[in-house]
Length: 133
Image 1 (cartoon, rainbow, N blue to C red):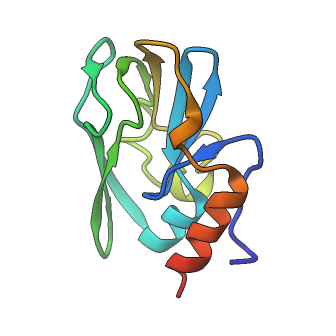
Image 2 (spheres, helix red, strand yellow):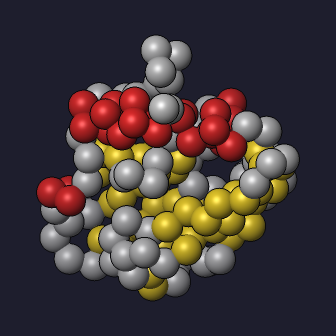
């Protein structure tokens, strides 16, 4: 757990996505814990394109690693503003820089976005501790 990077200025989900909130622009990705659990990420396939509407819980993409595959879900309702088009050709960015160049998508919230249902960095640390056991 001590080597897992959790950034204090982000929000998190119990399914190990991070969320950066900038007004109505929401950037999402997978956490450092998630990329370490997945291990070597070898493939990413988007299920959305820019301009697509999404609902909370919609699958944005599938991330495949050597040992498993996981869907990444939208944490809110809105419209896909941008997807990280570097990831399909270079999915290892999710392992190398999950909080930087490994971001997955930017969503424009369809209404005033409240992060009340998301986890703070401190709350997410507890999820990671529980997941690690």
